[in-house]
Length: 256
Ligand code: 13P
Image (cartoon, rainbow, N blue to C red):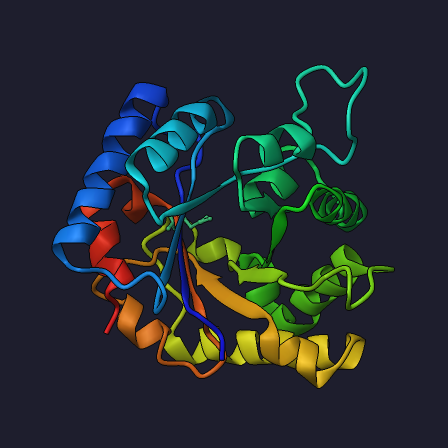
């Protein structure tokens, strides 16, 4: 069975001192609530510059919160000014790396092919990729949201074998629902997560798709998370804004 994952994407918020405070408050709040990490996994995605501090807090305080990077280079080392290698992220204790967040795709023009290379780089360094896909308002209004999103999925996973992709996490994040307060209805989230799972079955196998966690992201809050996660194919949430408030994020992690 798939362990639900509640993941907080801090985006470009929280410098390393603020990040330490947020993580410590989150850890205390989860502890107070007797959070069972074996039942619901919790992860945070801080900016690169916070990761060393996050590692120190997690290791120093023996936290069960996992963490990952918001992006990584498709290269391992060399003349790539400003890029960050998966090798360095693995050494900082990252479990995950986001790949192809819609803000990367839009602002940095990352293509499906780039995402595929980044998924491959993550795997090469023992990081679990969290591949983000999702349509914009235009595709949604035209009714092409399923085909658009599945095409992103296929393009970003092309040429990767089932064995290489073991542990993969997919995040369905409709662009029109990100940071807008506009949340996809539980049926919309379920429809797309189900379509993604079916596509993973055709690409690989039923065993693979059954084991792959598919998250929903886009204006998730404690007030709407239970409805969204009630979909049989929705295995967790990728939370932006609401993950910056420790109490709210801890509430999201108790989504029942
Ligand atoms: P919001 O939760 O702020 O809408 O952001 C969603 C997101 O992009 C998470 O990666």
